[in-house]
Image 1 (cartoon, rainbow, N blue to C red):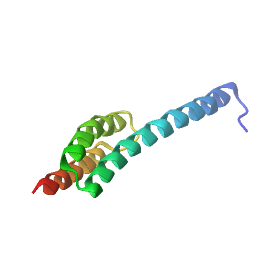
Image 2 (image 1 turned 45 degrees about the vertical axis):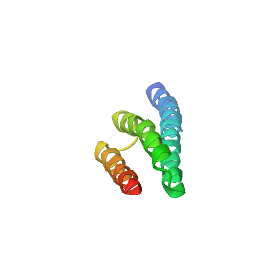
Image 3 (image 1 turned 90 degrees about the horizontal axis):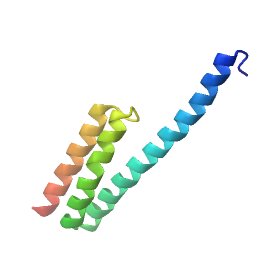
Image 4 (image 1 turned 90 degrees about the vertical axis):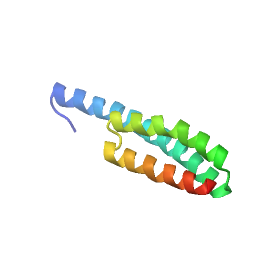
Length: 88
C-alpha cells in the first residue's frame, strides 16, 4: 500500500486513468467490430460507412495513447483495403 501522500494521489490517478483508457479501448473495439461485421455480411455500403465512423475513433485512441499511432494507421489501412476489395 502507498505510504506517502504523493504515492496515494498517484494511485488514485492511476485508477482514474485506467478506467478512462478502458472506456476508450472498448469504444474503439466496438467501432472496429461494426466494420468487421459489415465486411462479413458482404455489404460494402454499410462497411464503408462503418469505416468512416471507425477511423476517427481509432485515430483519437492513438492520439490519447491507448494504441500506438502506427497500430491505428495499420488497422485503418487494412480495413480500408478489405472494404475496397469487397466492392470489386
